[in-house]
Length: 432
Image (cartoon, rainbow, N blue to C red; front, side):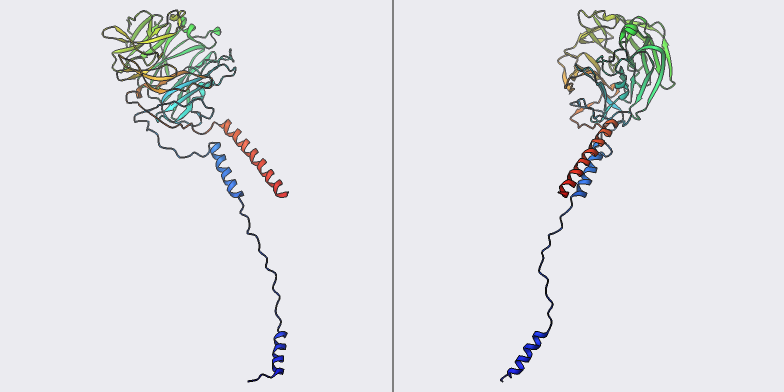
């Protein structure tokens, strides 16, 4: 069939007359950039909370207070980031130890309590604060005189700064402190806790201004023996025992051995006193000296040439054990000079860098290491003596608790300042 040319022309004209909308040119829009600001802000908040101690990372549970205590194989070193007992108590302690400082004029003494889990560390801030005598502010003294109770729940704190008016008892479970008065203007020496941790023996004498916080001279001349009963709050003076410088309770708590000058006396509950003969140049080994079976007492051997050691100024030069039934004294093979307690037949002691177990015969073995370092030195080491019988020694972590509040505030201020600087830089870069 032949199409009429006129019809074909009409169709073309009709098609061309139909309006066709113009298409806009294709524009490829860039994908919107992902903003990292929320992520950065969230991360900054988490870091901030962790830094100021408001959020704690999860930790493994510690040993319960009623179970066997753990001694860390290596004690944590000195740190300004250790929380205080008053702000963040961590419960009973297996040990306490004090850091002093070396040649710097402004010292930072710290007394640290190690929890029974072996990993919780807290500064006993009251002892650190009382450490420096007011009449010798640059004296590089350690923390104040302290004594850990056998159960590890309390720490008795005296005052080395000058005339004091109390003996303070810090409860490690609560962080609270209770004060028990002593005569005004006194020098105080903490001597021994009873095995049940309910009585505290101490010596008290008029303070001497020339002692610079050291009570030994005044106590050797005029010190009286006093016993504080924590249940009643009553302090009793023991007559006839002037000049006591060291003491140790028997395991049953019925007898108190006291060192008076060169003489060792055993005081019974009825007021009787028996002299215990000592080898020449030996003296009672402090509050942890009496063995759990009651048959032995650990002694310090006094270094030759120690000046007037009977009045308190003396240097230890070894350890010995006195067998009470036979009165025979046996020297121990160790260079340790601080007696810490007993673990069955072995004596626990410290040489300033380690805690050692000393058998009746043979060399000592190291249980745990201390870390003086960084121009610091270890002045005091004590163990909770009621917990040493089944004491475990193992590697542990370090939990110092939340940062002390001054460091939290300082860190918060620095982080806020740093955050402001970052925001200013980001805005300038965008504006440019």
